[in-house]
Amino acid sequence: MLNHASSRSGSRLEYDYFGDAFGASLDPAAGPVPPGAELLISYGDRSNDQLLQYYGFVEAGNPHDSFLVDQQSFLLALGEADPYPKERLRRLSQARVPLTDNTAAVSLTAEGGGPRAMQLARLLFLAEADLADDGASPSSPAGEERARRAVGAAAALVWKQRRDSRLEAAGAGFAKGSPTDAPSRHRGLARAFAAEKERVLERCVAACGGRCE
Image (cartoon, rainbow, N blue to C red; front, side, top):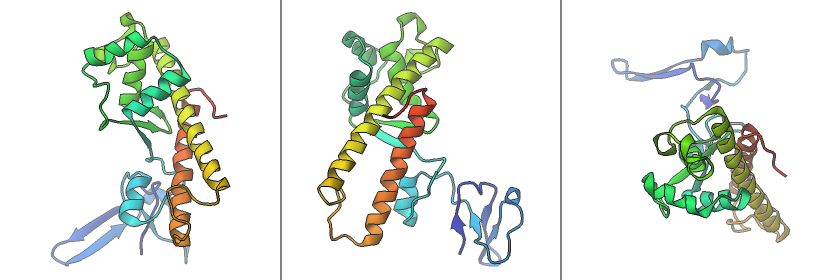
């Protein structure tokens, strides 16, 4: 069996049509494999959501993981963590960004906010003269720093809400969202998944120059 590690991005898995067999080549950058060691390849640049759904495990420290939050919740977190002039919400419609789009997901990663998160922050926190391409393109260095700080403040608030919810659930004696009689392996996966998502938020906050408290 070949297990997954995101760090083995140079590995390859190929199908030999004429031989009707699969062949694998290990990542040459990983160096030789000691006798008895685990053989690792990369299953691709997959988030923990994908790894859990398709393969049934969670990778600790997954560099391709992200935390997804719906747009409305992110806007609420932005306004609570770093209040902005409410009249600037009009900029969203002017930029053709629906204010109540429940299908839009905002991505937060270990590197900071994804494109939608940064666009929303630019539209709500920057001066009109600093906006480019309806907030979709980077602004000046100072403008980008301001937008990153806002994203970081919102991510820190989301992290705190999740932590408080988890502690409250633990105090009640059950894993939130999971029946207490769930198999121990399922509970372990749920805890590992939740822990990795909190780590993504922590790294996002740090990348934006903030801290989780």
